Length: 150
Image (cartoon, rainbow, N blue to C red; front, side):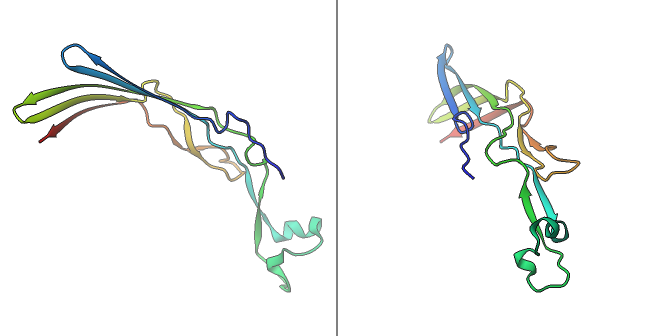
């Protein structure tokens, strides 16, 4: 099979901006626009279900009277279905304080400003839990930090 994914399914956009503010403050921001993960539907099919359509046992079952082997089948052609694109925006406000020969860098970080819950991983095995999210982008988070340079 020839699979030709769309141009958008592989494109990534990442932007970073740093802007100086009065009072020795700096504002910076990072924006990422990433493709969604590929959707798949895999199904494990047992040898006993394959024999009627194939007319023989699986290759790994050659010569066996009973075989418990199975083969995994893709129900959706790989590279043709994707989750929606992920948009992530992070922001930082920082200030550098000079204390003699030491420098203190105080930071306020806000991650996932847009609070998007994009799917990062999901169940790909076809069944009752097919396409259930296993992991999503972490919720909006605020972090205070200090760096000491000496």
